[in-house]
Length: 261
Image 1 (cartoon, rainbow, N blue to C red):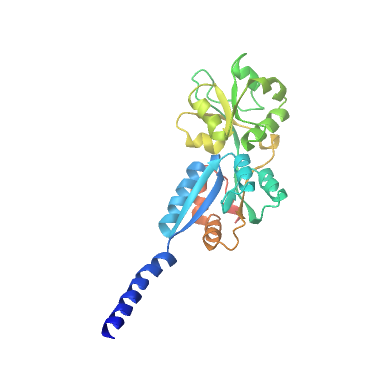
Image 2: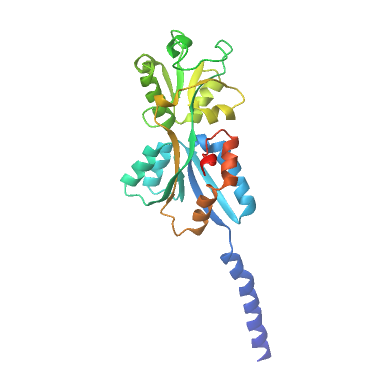
């Protein structure tokens, strides 16, 4: 009887050691985020993980790519798109989009790393962009067929009356960071990216910003993806709208609307 009692005590002790490990294992939240958020969101995630027992795994790509991955079963619990259209598209696919709101805003910038171009050139105010590029040089952009930065660029160039002329001279990137890379390497003399991408780069300078009235507002909606019962995802989503998180995004040049909150 004594041996049996000791045996039971040992089993109970082992269970006490194993059960907490399983119960309190750190949660993992996967976040699908537009490529233009890479630097700012990485810093925000690091700050959040330092304060919470959670692992946040970001996946960066163009909003169109991420939306299609989610529609095809990606396990992302949070989606931050670089435009409202791809979030709308997800909802139209009957994806369970929850607690959607606008998180950030951005501006569209003409950038260059070329010493041959002027220091400043404001689209719509100075000479035409085609004239700035010369006769053969190309303009680096996110692919207007699906990349939000490219879609905004097309809208802006159409408003300025330059779309048809520049269309055959576009160097199309799979996302806005790919477009930025071509400019950094001086494979194109200029490109159109978000203002925040330009600020994150050590190689390019902002020639000028496109007038905001030439394109749709650059808005980053955030939403849970079928994760309203996922406590870790809900908590992260709530924190990303906090003053602490928004101050990080503001440091990278995003318009957070903090003054209006």
